[in-house]
Image 1: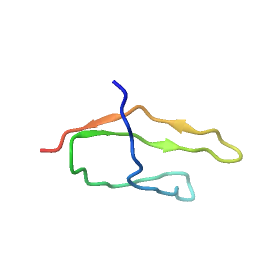
Image 2: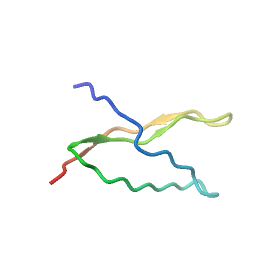
Image 3: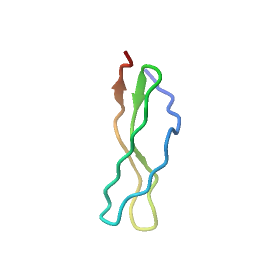
Length: 54
């Protein structure tokens, strides 16, 4: 099954490289982290994780 993802939040890392984001889901679906990369580090794409809104 092909999932279409939308950007819901853009975050920046702290000085140590850690990141955190909180987003409230309004419907069932899936989410994932995406790192586009920079001049020294290649991009990365996480596997999606399901969200079940009750």
